Each structure stands twice: as C-alpha cells, then as structure tokens.
Length: 525
Ligand code: B12
Ligand code: SF4
Image (cartoon, rainbow, N blue to C red):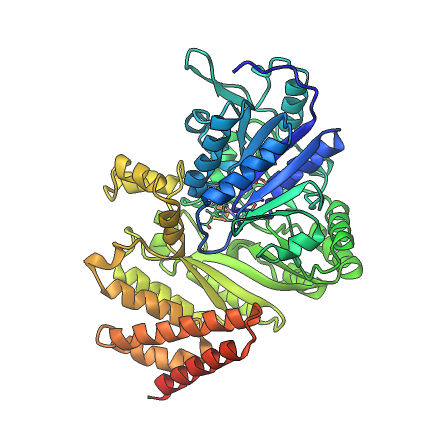
C-alpha cells in the first residue's frame, strides 16, 4: 500500500474487550510523550460472558474515524479469542477508509504470518519504541518496510518478517500506563462514552480499581500458556524477565490516585508478582507509607515465601490468586508441565491461611480430554486438604494457537490439526465457553466426570464440608443431589454478586432470601 505524506499526528489505538489494556495505555502514553496525539478507543468490556460487537457499535467506531484525520489505526489484539470481533472492525475500516491498519499485541506477536494477511503493517513484540518509530516514519511519508519489528506481505504476496529490536531492559523509561482521561472513548451497550473520569464511571465496569504491571516475562513454561512461546520469540534479544524500580511503580500509583481519588483497589497484573527479597521489602515499606489502599496479586506455588508474603500483607495485600490447576501430579507434570508437588501446595495453603486479612483463590483447569475420572478425584482430594478459607476459580482448558498443549493433543490423537484449527477459529461465544468450563461434549463419554467436577466446585465451601464428604462417599448415586446443591450455590452466589453490585432493592433482597431458604432446606434435609 502506498503511504501518502501526512503531517497529521493523530493516531487511533483500539483495544478489544480490554477496557484497561495496559499495552495500549503504555503505547499511547509513550506516543504522547513524544509529540503525537493518540486517541484510545476501548471497544467492549471484558466480563465473563461478553457480548459480540453490534452493527450500531461498528457505526459508532466508523463515526469516530470519520470525524478525525488519523495517521493510522492500531488494533491491539491480546488473544485469539476475540478474532471474530476484531475482523468486524478491521473490515469496516478497510471498506470505508484509505488509512493504514496496524496490528499488534500478544496474538499477532505469536502468529505474525497469519495475522499480517489482514492488516497493512504488523508490529511484532513490545510496542512502545516500535510504534514511535513507525509513527514518525509514516508521518514523514518515508518507507517503513525496513523498520525493526515490522512484518507484512509485499506486492508479490511474499511474507516479510523483519528482525526484532532488543527487549527494553530499563522498563522505567516506558512511563506509566495511566489513563489520560482525555482523548479516550469507550464503546459498549450501543453507546460511545467520551472519556473523562466522569464517563469512566458510567462505563459498566469497575472504575474504582487501578491495574498496572511491575514487570514483563514469566519464568515458567506451562504447556497451555503462551509465556514460553513469547520467551522463544525474544531469544537473544536481552534479559526476558525484567522489573521496574519500586519508585517508578509507587509514583505511577500515586499519580493514578491523584487523577481518580475514587480508586479503592490496586491490581497488579503481572503473571507472577516479583519475589526478590530486597525489592519486596522496599516496595512493601513504600507502599504502606505512600499508598496504603488494598492491593491484589497473582502468585505461583513455587514462589511463595512466608517472610515476603508477610511484608506484602502488612503493606495492604488483600487478595492473592494462585494456580496449581490440578490435584493430579501426572496432569501437572506430564500434561501441564508444572512441577509443584501436592505437599508443596498444601504447605503453601497453610501459609496463606495464616493471614486472616488475605482472601485466597486457587485457579484450576479441569475436565479436558487428557484427564480421567481418577484424576478428577485426586483434585477433589487435594482441595479438601487445603487450609481454608479459599475460593476456587475453575476453568476449562483453552487451546491457544502455538502453545505446547496443542501439539500434545495432536500427538496423543485427541484432535487432528484441522479440528484444532476449527477450535481456534470458533466463534467468540464458543471460545469464552471453553474458558468458563469444559467443552459441551466433554461429559458425553462419562457422566461420572460431571459429578466429580461438581464436587470439586463444592469443596471450596467450608461450611458444606461434612455434607459434601457424605455425598462424595456414594457420588454416582448422589449425582442428582450434588447437581442440585451446586445449582443452588451457584445461583445464590450470583444473586449475592448482583446484590453487591447495586441490586440492593426489595426484589433483589427477596430473591436472595428465597434462595438462601432453599439452600438451608436442602442442607438440612
Ligand atoms: C493481564 C492479563 C489479562 C487481564 C487483562 C488484559 C488486559 N486488559 O490487558 C485479563 C484478566 C482481563 C485477561 C483476559 C484474557 N486473557 Co490475558 N493476560 C494478561 C497478561 C498476564 C498480561 C497482559 C499485559 O497487560 N501485559 C503487559 C502489556 C504491557 O503487554 P502487552 O499487552 O503484551 O502489550 C505490549 C505488546 O503486546 C504490544 N502491543 C499491545 N497492543 C498493541 C497494539 C498495537 C497496534 C501494537 C503495534 C503493539 C501492541 O505493545 C505493548 C507494550 O509493549 C498476559 C500475559 C502476558 N505475558 O502478557 C495474559 C495473556 C495475554 N492473556 C491471555 C488470554 C488467553 C486471555 C483470555 C482469553 C483469558 C480468558 N479466556 O478470558 C482473556 C482475553 C481478553 C481479551 N480481551 O482478549 C493469553 C493470550 C495468549 C494468546 N495466544 O492468545 C496471555 C498471553 C496469557 C496466556 N495464558 O498465554 N488477561
Ligand atoms: S505460571 Fe502462569 S504465566 Fe507463567 S507459564 Fe504458567 S500459566 Fe503462564
């Protein structure tokens, strides 16, 4: 595509189902700092059951582009899940505007050859410096084809992949991922909100939390995750696991709270929160003194240390989510490529439960074709051994393009390559269903699996322990009762969440009480 000379410095960045996208905010702030005028459009929120982009919402984005003279439009694609929706916007821009479309984000970084078919320019890898160079080049009307990180198809249809620039080693230079609260739009519910703190509050998603990352890179290589693949992409490009300085992190949070004093919770979106003792010590001290509000993190069973955890709780850590994924050592080691032992997991749970102020959640991936009923029972048994209280976040196994689990599935004859490609390209709704639970055909071969999956779910409710243990003794015969109990708990917790989210009206309270009564009746029957 011929790029005309363009003195415009306005750039549109679009994030999908990611209204807090740190990547897009980082790039936007970096461009802003360097003289460009970025506009961010967050299309749709990221709830558990998201809805597709509507015609009306596509029109709203059309109008936004029509009213402005953008140098180019950048689409940020975090995962393959949202591809069908990304294409809707991509097609609309292609059809109506003669403006370069640039794709970037984790998914295009992992699958550049496939993604470059749909855009004019693909920027692979870390986006801040690469996007600045691209913006400057496009603005001057110069040739962008030799820039680092760029991939594209040339006039003859040949795929070209340029070398990657080294990884940014000093993450402090990137700046903050804070929301500028201007030049920002949210599209949801067939409406477009022009961003300022007030409209951010209208946007149907938590505006009173602040999300940020301390570092980049994860040291582990779980087979279902893209982390190890990203590490391969960057091989030879500098240290992969990097952390910002404590000062930079604290200043970012301070600035965010200054802009939005309603922030009540800070969420660290690092795959694994840093564990280096001197860093944690310094961070905890400064956080307690200068920020003081609750914060939440993700951790890893092999990286939890009592002393560091104590410092973080003292500083304000109030929720931690830790994945161990399965109670079966075979599944963890041979299928998921995870190497914590059951004993280590139990020990960690004891440490975690010794902090009464700390909410603890464990992530599980259950009900997939490589797991048998006995392995589900092992997960149930391990959950019963964990020190309470804790919550479980139970997921199905997602198949993400380029992850190792995909090859395992093919090698073990579970799916053919074509079947897996169909899964990658399945509808938006189907993709999210997969994440929220097992695929619809999962229980078909053995209904016993469902009973044990339900029992695992019930194991997190400590008050039900005795009841659940009794039901588990004769699980198959009690299948109906187990299913009923799970459904009541599910709808109770849904009602409770609605209640907390503002449904505190008479109808909401009545519904909650009715379901609570149902539960008590069931429990004492
Ligand atoms: C935090 C996080 C989340 C958060 C928040 C996401 C968000 N709003 O940003 C939540 C919990 C909501 C989430 C949800 C999901 N996530 Co997630 N998530 C992450 C995590 C841990 C960090 C993301 C992050 O903020 N990184 C920091 C920023 C700075 O990096 P970045 O986003 O990559 O952006 C940089 C570059 O990619 C690039 N870039 C980004 N956008 C653009 C745009 C342009 C135009 C350009 C040029 C460059 C560019 O420049 C940025 C700055 O350097 C990553 C793991 C990881 N290693 O990144 C997984 C990860 C991205 N998630 C993943 C998945 C699968 C999901 C879900 C599908 C899970 C689910 N089933 O619900 C959803 C999908 C949501 C969606 N909208 O697509 C996968 C994606 C893998 C894949 N191959 O598709 C990852 C890699 C983890 C994994 N399991 O492998 N996620
Ligand atoms: S610990 Fe988490 S982020 Fe790291 S490889 Fe495993 S699943 Fe991925």
